[in-house]
Image 1 (cartoon, rainbow, N blue to C red):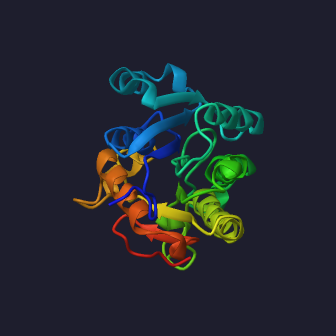
Image 2 (image 1 turned 90 degrees about the horizontal axis):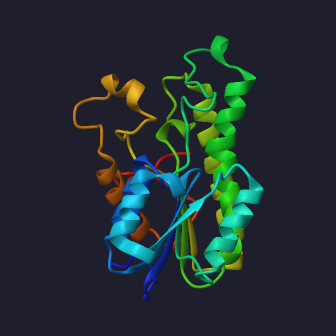
Length: 256
C-alpha cells in the first residue's frame, strides 16, 4: 500500500513536533520505509535533539532537521525555504503539535480554574500553530497527491463530550477540527488530489499523558511506535474523498 492514496513515487514527508513522543516515532517509522525519499523533522530544538541526531546517523541525508517554532510565522517562512531547497512538493505533512499541561496550559477540572493564560497557551499551540503550518506549506501541497494530517483528540469532539472539564484543551482541539475542515474545502479547489485529516491517536505514553496515565484502562495506553503505525495506516486509507474528516486510531470516524 502506498504511503498516501494515488502516490506512485517516493514520498517527501514533513513531521512537525518531531523531536519527541508520537512525532519522533513517526520520523522513525517514515525513515524505515523504502518508499519515503526524505523526511523533514521540524521542532523547536530539532538540531540539538539527541534522538533526531541518532536517526541522522542511521539515515544520513534522508533526514533533514529544521529548528522551527510553528507559533512563529518567521520561523515557518524559514522552514518553507529549507524544504524548497530540497523539494518542490511535499506529499505528506503530519502535525504532531499539541500541549495539555505545558507552557502555561492547564487541564482545568472546573470553570473556576479557567484562566486567560491557559486558554491562550492551549489555543496557540493546539489550534493556531497547525493551521499556520498548513498556511505556509500550502505552496508545496498544490501539485500531485498530498495529505495534511494533524493530531487532534477525541475530547475535542463536541458531540462526544459527556464528562466536561479540560476547557482549554477541549476547546482548542475543537477549534483545530474546524480549521482543518475549513482548510480542506479550500485545498480541494486548489488541488483535487489533496486530503486534510484530523486524527485522534489514542492515549499514548508521552509527556502529554503522563500525569493521567493511572486512570487509563488496561490495554488502552499505547506506545508511541504503535500510535505512529496506526496514524500511517489511517493516512494510507483515506484520500481526497475523505478530506475534512475526523478519525480515531482504530479507523472509526469521530463525531464533530
